[in-house]
Image (tube, rainbow, N blue to C red):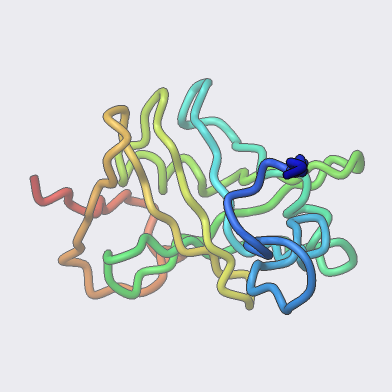
Length: 161
């Protein structure tokens, strides 16, 4: 009897698994997904009370409809809106300027903290603050006021812990 030798090709563990035809349920690669700039964060590396630069992609997103001011609303801190003037430097950079200091003081923003923003439209940004332990700080307010323009005093949101 003559022996026949069988050659084996490939190193797969079975037939057709993960290859070949058939529809894939995998999402498209990230480069083909639409870019939606509605959430971003900044890290406070310098004096927390001076103007803060926002990401260039967010500034680009607002190109042509640059607001003179935005309204910051601390998540879970009632309806109060903090009015903050916006500065554009002509080089495509956007800064939170006058009014940021009051917001930062009221929320205790400090060095090394993360500040998360979500653009809600109509120039409103909802803000979440994360402290140096990388944990979110929760605030509540006993202030019935919904607008700080008539009030020069800083009324802090209170961290419950």
